[in-house]
Image: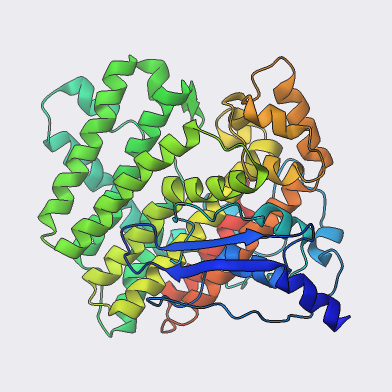
Length: 457
């Protein structure tokens, strides 16, 4: 048995494995060739998918023999059917009450069989999330209220054009989940507490504002690109104004955010936050394309997800840590926390597109399929239903493709596997937060992971 397992491990030929130390470029590239027909050892798949350990200038991976049971993961065997909502284990009541690298940023994980590896689910339980009786939204109620008020004030002060003011401030009415400013403020206060500082620095508060402004600018541009008619349960900016005006309003929000970044007068923070905008544009371009092979497709999806969603949360958390005087280790911890929360958030968002109602989401469901996008549930479903592959390549453009793909995803374990991967990222975020000094803000950072995995909209 042990000898057979060693043969399986040795079928992986590692041709290069290194970590690029630049925080502003693609940090991790793991390049290897997969030989043989056996599936990748689950322990190695976990390393590939999480990329969560300490950064070094270079690293050589040892070929380790890991004895894992050759059976499907119990979380998949016993997973409750997901339909209509993701309210589940602990803390979902919190969300309902309050409403709410290494990284996947490398250029490629060349032809990695990540999808196959995860789908085998031969890993340990991702663990349970803490059930603290604390509500981050209530804890930061005044902070978040002030953030949105100051954003609107900043936008209004930078133009005398009334219609531009109206469009630019349209999404800053507080109807969103406020995840990005919440994570930035919680991390800032937790870091300050860890370093025996009191309160929230003005510069850290500015970063929280900037993160939400960049996010909302991307929503404005998304509404134009996707021709969306609804956002957050109300007509989108695209439905109310012309595409030219909406596009320029999104540019205006980014311009004001860039001015605020410059006023911080911190070169390292400027580079960190500027990288977010670069990642957003690259992520959008990646979303317009696809990959021929199943292996490349999943790596492409993960990289796109990091750039479009996780980069903003990760780099904002890192920026507030740097402004709080954190050393390199603590700043990297903040980055990794935000990266994991961001990836989990988007994985759940992609899942909800298949299970929540339009009323709950505040936007049409199955929207990604209609836009020709293959997200994690579809990519996982390809394991059981290979007929999805040609649909993905033609971007679900033929009559009946969207309906058929939607049906096959629900027949597969794609939803359960997506949620499983999201929970692994949430558990990793909790592990990172636990290393900070104990405080209400540190506990709230852990609760955020619960809000993310159990959200229903």
